[in-house]
Length: 114
Image 1 (cartoon, rainbow, N blue to C red):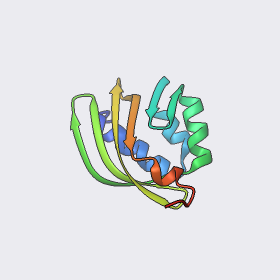
Image 2 (image 1 turned 90 degrees about the vertical axis):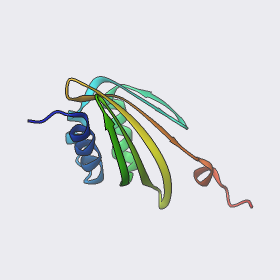
Image 3 (image 1 turned 180 degrees about the vertical axis):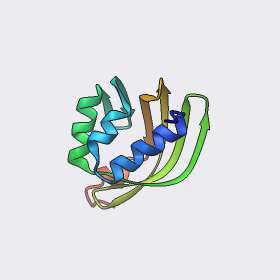
Image 4 (image 1 turned 45 degrees about the horizontal axis):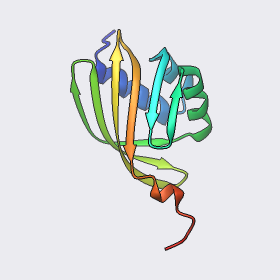
């Protein structure tokens, strides 16, 4: 099986989009770390549990890879709001060790005020 970083990250995103959370979990290191605009999560099991509740959908726009790292630009459907985001995935030994995401959170925090 090919364990290059791009393949692993593509599989992970595909599994999340298909709500195959056990498949997504299989490509994460146990001590996986997620860092995002709204917080940090440590541990693959916690991250996958939260993802299974949120059921985000990813539309990948562009992928860049180098060595063990992959950067994606994508639209993420978050509760019916399409958010442009960028994710940086670091892999080790064929699994994702860490993932950092950046996006503008204001559409999620907007309470309808203009």
